[in-house]
Length: 196
Image 1 (tube, one colour):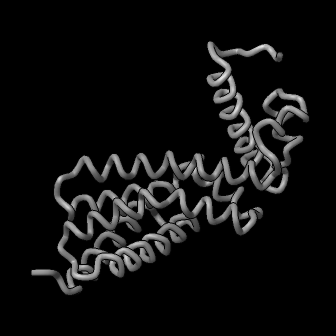
Image 2 (tube, helix red, strand yellow; image 1 turned 120 degrees about the horizontal axis):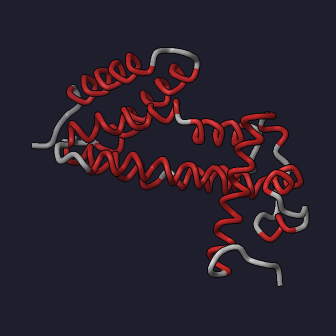
């Protein structure tokens, strides 16, 4: 049995998995997403080439795991900032601000570059599903704002945030884009029908 470096086998596996995913992101940052292969990641993490197959069945599996991890961390941080606010209007501001702040988050950006290098349709759906808690938090906020059609409003809000995210990624000043997006979203939601 291989020597473990943590108190338990489960902790050892978790640590190795984290090392492998960090190695993948380091390769993306230094060499580009196309350079991420199972062999390259294993070498960077200090594991044998065959050992990585105990963690990932394929490059696609690795990409999905890295992206799911980045999305889960990102969603947790955004939801924490939203739930720290009692007022739905302030929760919405936190949603916009924290999501757009991810454009400056290196780990999230590297994971997105890795995703864009190619992933299976099934893998893409898994990553999309990892966003479900964040979609739920936005929907709860919009219900709290007493909107008559919160699901439709959520789609509008996310479309605005996605467009703003691309503006920041292509060089627009983040603070200005965040303020503009919040004003745009708030004004649009104000014009939607509200329940009595």
